[in-house]
Image (cartoon, rainbow, N blue to C red; front, side):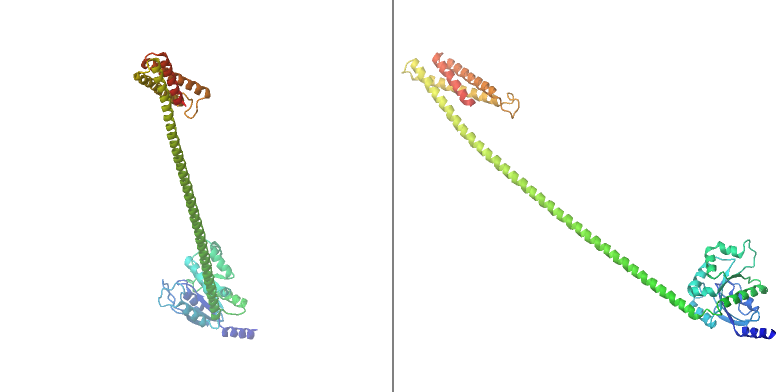
Length: 423
């Protein structure tokens, strides 16, 4: 038994267990490495800036096994201007050759802030999901007593709890302020042995990280292409919308223009119709006026002729009657009779004109556009003739020398003149 145990111890001494320390500035990476080896193999002190400026490797015996620990600087929050994060990270994995059996991710328990969550996000993005099955989370700065246990504090933070679950619930509280506590080192090495056994002694290698980086770049490239394609699609849709709006606008403007032209054409036709109606109306009115004027002129000529005929007939008859009643040799009596008959006929004409005006007056008619009834016309015409008769008789009586035949003939002349004017 002692021989086989010695052989196994020798094999374990020959095979290095490679541990890669990852953490931000102040998380205690160098102090953790020193506690594991129980010696000051890495420079460690409290500082606001990173003490470890480049990757360092140390191999030593821990609990009868060979352990190699690679201490690293802060890859994400380094304040150095000349620091190349990618080069140092590749250097760290090259120092792990052939690879890291366990990645110890150090988080500060007493100062767990959003920076720590940003660091876990960077770790998972940079190393890839494959690295989580090689990872053990160490919560450092855990010397003070807490009202809650570490498990309770993890459950209180959903993001941290989710990250721990993806790491297979592999976490450990590690007090870097108690370097003499070898029990926590033994517990850590037991967890490391279990993890190495579960992973069949496989390692996380530089090739894995490069493959992760390649896949990430491929995802970013695809995402960029998809983003570009989406932008191009949106640009095409935007151009199509603009083109559709342009076509709709042109169609609407053309339709409105055609409608405006049509309305103008209709308005022009309406004006032309109005002009034709106006011209036709003016022509008809002018024609009616000219016809009325001609008729009036003809009527006046005929009326003058009738008046002259009445005047001459009764003037001559009255003159003749006057001569017959007196002495045929007296020319004065003919002139007096001529004047009496003519005056009586003229008085009858004026009387007839007066009654004709009364016949057309709106004082006699019930409406200015309504003609008097036939009975009323007969009565008015009869009254006009009687008035003309009376006027002629009066003139014959006073001018004709109170001769009955002359008076009667003058009255008849007045009646004839009135009747002629009323027609």
